[in-house]
Length: 229
Image (tube, rainbow, N blue to C red):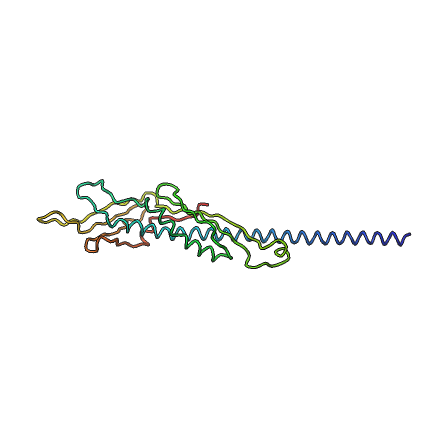
């Protein structure tokens, strides 16, 4: 009788130990999967932030180039002081699309991430937002949790803002040649001031077909790039 009871108790204990071991294994796998998922989210966010900033920097360079190059046909008036060159505002959104390549490259440099969405949009006067989404996943399945539940992956979003710094104003200054005939425009310059940078200048000369002459990095200081979400 006592032997039968001991065998039954031993059997019950064995079952309990097995269940306890399985519970410990399950908890361990769950914690591992949660940790890997959290790591994937972190990688995806890092990739999204880097992609958004890289795209915004590229877009800023294109914004400066598109704006100043597009002013080549502009001619200042000798009599109408209100005849001003076009503001940079109108050139921001087209330039923002040029950042998609940089976003793709920077997303790929961060822990097996890929760019899944790229959306530029106006966010206000002289301000453009670039929204990106990235997907990150482990390079290859590792461990029991991955074999059971698949490779951890996660998406993340980031938004970078490009804007002309507040207070920036750009005005033309022309050089006319006067003689016996009608005055001739020899050259004109776009003088931009504001934000404590002094005068930043782009020059357009008749001798070069009024093509834009400027320093891109100097003009780039009139713009600001930052993460906003």
